[in-house]
Image 1 (cartoon, rainbow, N blue to C red):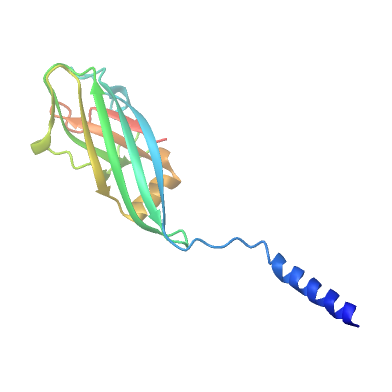
Image 2: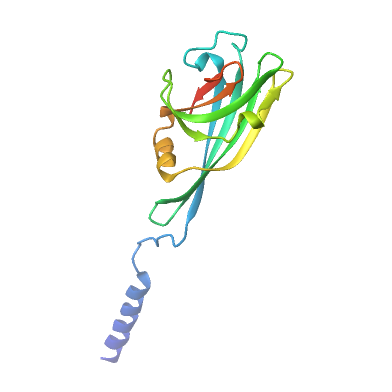
Length: 172
């Protein structure tokens, strides 16, 4: 009888130590980065640029920094922009830059403004230039839309000569 009692205790302890395989849920927020590298071209504008700034190019690196709660709901989102521009005529000036809603070949409304403005324009005395904007706050709704379908959005830079946009590229 005593051996049976000891065997029952050992079996019970072994079973208790085996617990389930259910992973534990995250207890705090998580932050992830999503980076888009966008090739910019004057030929991608709608309509394509046909004046002195035709042939202008650039690259935009757009980094979304997204914080989510344990349930996966976005609680904060910011975006950083690093943009380089080349092949502009000497003396061109970049004055605005945005993420717009719109598929390739479609012009759409501004969704996220970089903060670049005519009062903080980027002169390109030799036809090249660059700028960075960091920590631009983005709504959870806009972040979700872009991350779910990046190709439905584009980034472009506006110049003095081409106020509607001079170089453009789709997010991918």
